[in-house]
Image (cartoon, rainbow, N blue to C red):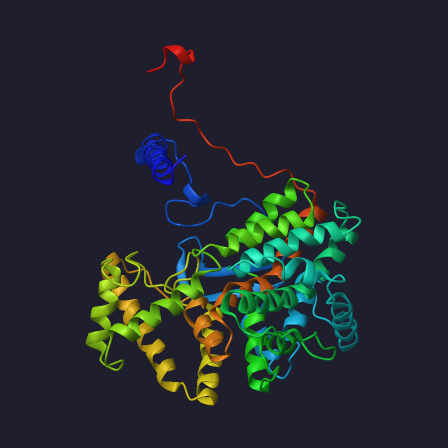
Length: 449
């Protein structure tokens, strides 16, 4: 079949889909459908209980907006990060907390770090046979492929006992940074025609330190760089059971499927630009802004550009100022507040204070414009994605692994939620969908038009 003929057939199929799959919007209100599992005021429909983390943006039945709060196993993340300020193993401590419900002692942390170091090694020839073979141009697809492939290396892959799932989870937590780094090196070699340089993980280094060492050609980094990346991993490690990828983890776990299928599905969710891919969109938006705004200090010029975005006349014409607004937080996103303070410190080390000031300026102007365009008094805040892409850029982390960075952290939260679902032996998650089409009589093919 000729290509142009096939394209015409495909276009016809698309027209049919657009026509037949379109549902009358009024029916959602008629049947009180919670689209996206949300109430009309945007609140998530309660579908489960968890002790792992709490995401707070309002107080009381009146839903009074407050500065956002995030808790891991009852500990407020702002205080947690502050308490970890002198440690490069903040992510390891946080992972221990999420999995086991308590902060480790020095001895427990040392043992836990040792366990992760032992599990970090990939199966023999895995890098050659899986990662380096037909590398995708998308790092999230590489992660998914590798996770699915690890199933074949696990003789008890389908064992969903808590003990074996915990072992699988610890292994994935340890190996995700290595897979992401090697996946990027393969991409860099095969698709960018660069030299292939592979560093082995080094014992005695934190997850953040090893990650910087693995993705950089010279393997070098500063203490501040490692600390900032460690904080990034801590604040991205978990965000409640209702975020899209974690809910996906609960859904698949409830079906009784294996760990590799579950985490692969969560990765597929995180890949989406409405979820984990948002920080890349923020960075792309700022790149476009720099190309279109001559004077970064001219607030009128910045306002004009940002208004054009809202009017769907600039950047990607989606009408969104990426990195602004959140489903739960209104006054502030605690993760963004934390990251902003570290972004400032890093910008001073990197001589990028001007770029940091631009982010601050855009954040301030965007809040006013979004509020005015929505004609609402509800506060709008910068979310964690607003500063994470900027921080990753200062850390010289390639844009190709922005979203995998999120996954490297969030695997801890996914694992904690998977174990919680298994321990509590919940029912299979099966929300209802109402059929609103018509019932029709079968017509033999020779009688169809």
